[in-house]
Amino acid sequence: MADKRLRRRTPLRFKQIRKISDQVEGLVGRPLNLSECFLEEAHFEGVDLILTDRTPCLMCLQNRDGGNVWFPTLRGLLKWSLERHYVEVDHGAIPFLMNGANCMAAGIQNSDPDIESDMPVWIRDEVHGRPLAVGWSLMTGEEMLQAGKGKGVRTIHWVGDDLWNLDSS
Image (cartoon, rainbow, N blue to C red):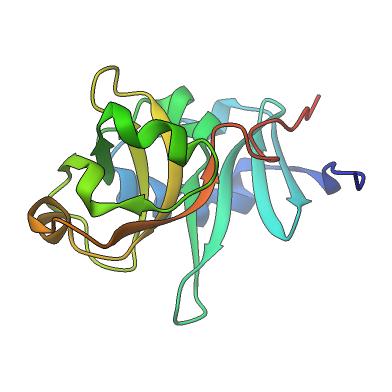
């Protein structure tokens, strides 16, 4: 197994990431209160991260147009308890998501109606509402609910992957 650890770890001041913080707050609709945290930037397996209090909480994703979009990691979702841009799946989908599979429309029980195609989203289980994965939407929120088959979300980060298991202390 290759050495999987954070690279290029550098402390940050809040003013250096104010634009990123504002962009993420606009996307998720909730203040992140990053000005009170110990902030660092780092690189892990081809992904730029922002660590808050030594926990990877934000990751930089690249959309189809080549632009960068910052979105919370699963640990960030747990920290901030977000309620927007979610896709809710039934119990049967969970084992597949834990292995990194894409989220199929058949397993989607509910979704944020504001989701547009090619937007970062997070997947949660319908019973507990806990984050299971992060990915790119392949349909709108409404289409996910109406589609009986096909991929709804292309998964990029899930519980149990290398980023989730990262020991960043």
